[in-house]
Image 1 (cartoon, rainbow, N blue to C red):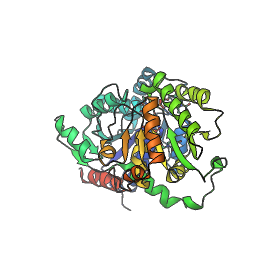
Image 2: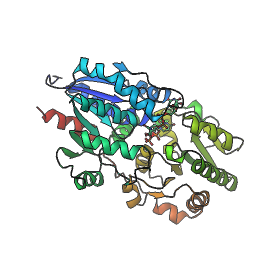
Image 3: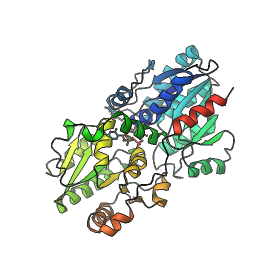
Length: 372
Ligand code: UD1
Ligand code: UDP
């Protein structure tokens, strides 16, 4: 295939969800453009689980991860370390995804050098600067300096228009669905044996649980874990699977509060295929993850969102997700309803995905191909 010589793209990312959502776009970009990949290493183990799986070659690594890193560490280290790489590579466009501090700092650095920025998953808003924190601020700040805005849904598109961002805004879908399709194509998931699940009793109903948000650290997270304990104690026929995030604020509390229960299985962070496998086998998902809210509908699995706000309103509107906050009793009651009332469960288990159709990467690269 003939590469288009006028364009050099540079992808900058650092965490697990960015890697998952950018991987299909990087693979598509490589078909047409000079494509440079730079990771901040905001995540380490959880990042390489993804890049290795998708065979993404890393050209530059800023090596910024520290144990219990602060937002200051992440932002300042990226700003300082990325400048010389941008100056050397001179990309025509820097592509960032979502709302992490890596995405924000990489965009800000590009802006300082007047390099064009393309923002994937643009326009998500919770309209509460502290929920999720610091992501709502990160994504708004990126919108203010980006040249191209790839909105995953109509709602995200409209959010940008309402903020006066009207130029170069494109409705593309969310590339998380492309990643999901790639996984399902690449692996015969049904026939794969995953050692990590050898202790899981698949005759029981699986509840897949994940939790990692900064605004939940401390008391709200204790309250969430308490609900998980109560569900496990009350329902013998469920198996709660919790791949524990490596953030020490999460990991330490999870092991303190949730070990010693026969039907709560704490695992290491799962590889993407392992995660998709267990998701496909789940009866119910309880999560504060953005990406997981977008993936569960592909399998028709109801989601309880353990947050006070969500920027993924599409799932709420489609009645496949419910915002339940962090209160123990509320989470327990909502889970109980889904575990005991089959009609209610069925009303929430529609296999529709409002987030994408698997063609987002092609759309984004086609738009970039048109730029001259
Ligand atoms: C980050 C993002 C968040 C995103 C989440 C996805 C920011 C501020 N936060 O949050 O938006 O939803 O990733 O998971 O951008 N750690 C490891 N190994 C790893 C990854 C993390 O040990 O592979 C530990 C380190 O001690 C690190 C800590 O986790 O300091 C926190 O990582 P950080 O990226 O700051 O925050 P997350 O909570 O992961
Ligand atoms: N995920 C994974 N392994 C896990 C947990 C999640 O591969 O153990 C994937 C999941 O499929 C989703 C993404 O990671 O695509 C979500 O990441 P996370 O919840 O850390 O971040 P968020 O989406 O909230 O920013």
